[in-house]
Image (tube, rainbow, N blue to C red; front, side):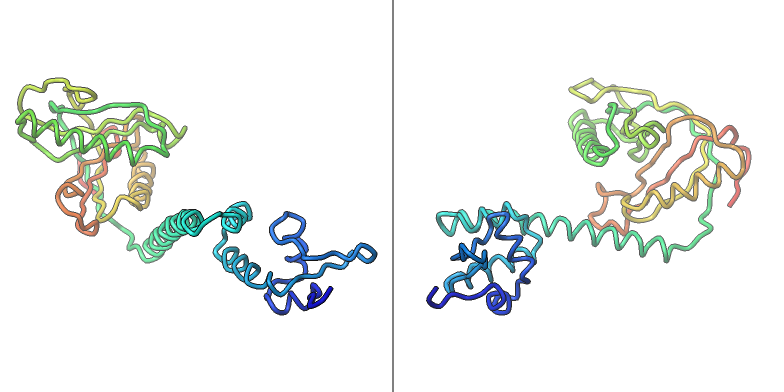
Length: 274
């Protein structure tokens, strides 16, 4: 056991606890160089120090043990780099999600109350639209794709928009995580059905309407105000929720400039109230 390091010495050198070193031995990540057959004591070689240092840094980045093994067993630098790069991409995605959640929470805590709610009678209007049953988790991606496809169809067919792009969303999307969704563009002109795009008539509705400013990532806060208003005044009725993208991503790449009108179905629209 010339130059052998006890597990205690190896722990002090590598800053990996004895408990952690024993765990790494059990899972086959870092085996001792030698094990005394009589005492079971673990001994490590000085040459294992760099490996332990690599392991500690990868684990500090929350890399799963299976991926750490893959990095250590990789035959060349390219293979190692691919595994590490994939893990860093996952970390960056998680970080972006965390930052968005933090920003949303701050917005909730700092959000002013008392937004204006108005009542509106919306007449039926001809439109071009895409309708599908959508899982709630897929709604954003579906909405983005449908909206882009609709705008392309409007341009290709030389249709004249008569109002902002809108959406109809069945309550089941939020209540049961799946339901009917429609994205539409009110237009003047004959619509030729192509692929998912089809002509439709957006039905008339009596709505309580509130304006949401900014990204739709925290539109649930505005929905909360509007739903509470409709419930408090005992005017809420069954029907799809409605959105009008007055100024959205199609108009500006800056989310702070986006304006969305959100409509809640009600049984009367005979007065305006804040």
